Image 1 (cartoon, rainbow over the protein chains, first blue to last red):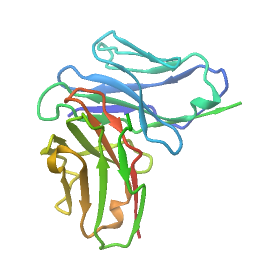
Image 2 (image 1 turned 90 degrees about the vertical axis):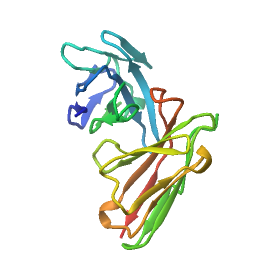
Image 3 (image 1 turned 90 degrees about the horizontal axis):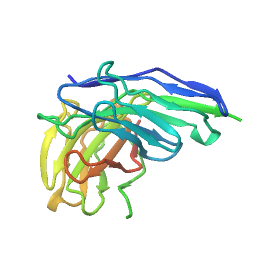
Image 4 (image 1 turned 180 degrees about the vertical axis):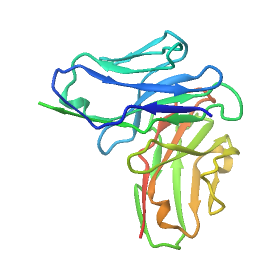
Length: 115
Length: 113
């Protein structure tokens, strides 16, 4: 079945450090891939997305590239800020079959950035 | 755009009691989803509606769970005879179409004592 595997956290970084959070997926068909972010006390928000192979999603300095050959969608940011502290979820949505439209999430990675 | 709203935000109940949660989606969205998130895990799909029709239910949704979306507007999720294992954050999301971006509400945190 469809699934997402996300690197386990937590991740603790100093401000301005480079961030990578690994995400790999298993899917039938041609899924769209997402990164969602959950700030403390807030709901899930879409951070970025990519809908086909080799697409790069980007937002707020974060980037992720849809790699079909390695079934990966790793999240990166060149210089993190304290305000980036949150839980990050990798997710996919299937484009066909009975599960069309259902989001599959990874376990989430807690990121803490220290000043 | 008022976003997706959920009520209540927190619910504490005793084991065996019934609880009901409400979700108000973004008004023009025809799809509405319910997910459950337990501590340290990502959200897991429970069920979804296309307008007023409930089209799929996860195996996570036991017979004690029921969801409705009358008139294709707001939705309710009821849990009967709650168990401690039902303690979780219940999330609602809505989208325009099956592959539209899903917008999430703030969630209802359920604690079963």
